[in-house]
Length: 513
Image 1 (cartoon, helix red, strand yellow):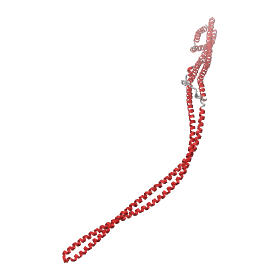
Image 2 (spheres, rainbow, N blue to C red; image 1 turned 45 degrees about the vertical axis):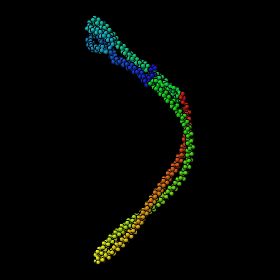
Image 3 (cartoon, helix red, strand yellow; image 1 turned 90 degrees about the vertical axis):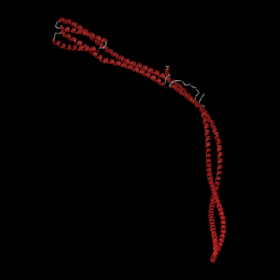
Image 4 (spheres, rainbow, N blue to C red; image 1 turned 180 degrees about the vertical axis):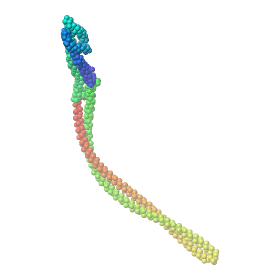
């Protein structure tokens, strides 16, 4: 039965219970077979045999009754008796014929058929002899002879009927015994097959149990060693598709994985212990540096606070200078405006002087023309003689006036030219002054812009220094928090180192080789 151990547990159980089910089916088939036999025997006993026995009994009784009636009729000379018994005897004889026919139909055995055939032959002789007896009625000698022969045939007929009845009774007993035997066989069949099924179930159960509990016990021992921390045993994988083999292989893989995992954990624990020691040392160094940094930050914070005050004063001074520069710019702008107005006025005077010079030039031209005309008039008056003497005097006066006008115009023109030159010089001076004022205004504006830039820059520096001061305060707070965190990290590193030592100790409880 070694092939059973190579089967899967499900296949083994299916095979075992299939075998038991097959045995139960065999039991069921045997029981059904016996039940069918019992049913057939019971049906034969209850129906056919009961009818055959009833017919045999009735046949036997009819023979006995009719034989007595025939003897009574044959030995008696009473016609009334013949009439009474004769009718009854005929009806019984007819009934007996029906019984013979029905009995012959019901009989199935060879022995029964032979009994019926023998009894039918005796019956024929019985009926013939009964006729002979009844025919000899009235003749005492013949009646005696026929009566003796009839009684002999009747005795043989009754004996044959008794044998048939005895056969049917015996057969009924045999059928009853057969039914009882079938019931007994059915009972024993059920008992035997049940015992066989039980034995087979026990054997299959024991085989399955041994095939399952044996490997499971080995797996339990392996699991117990693994639970105890013994991972050093090298267990080979087993081939096969049986569940216990597969379970064992999985446990082997688990043991191998655990051994590799525990080895890695041991290495990692040692690495953690070393790293935690280094972290603790680094945290101690970092704590010292953090404290030094915190002290430096406190000094820097004090310096930045002083610098903040200085920058604020500078910003106030820059704002004051900016206001003064704006005032100077305003005054310079007003001066520039006045100078520009003066320049425009000088330019207007210069233009007017030039216009006057032009007018004087025109007057000079007119005087010159007048002088020419006066000269021409004098010449004409001289030609006219005495008549033109008065006109010549007038022309002379006109010429004199023209000359004086020309002289005055020349003098005015000279004065105007001098004035124009002076105005031009003044205009240039005023233009130079205007340009200087513009440059002064531009310079003052640039100074204002520079002062504005200085003020804005100083304000930004003040705000930046305030921000830097706040950042330094925040950095100082963060540094203090970092110092606290460094202390916590140092404590955590120490705890981690202790936990790593404990982990190393715990992992050391596993035996890997």
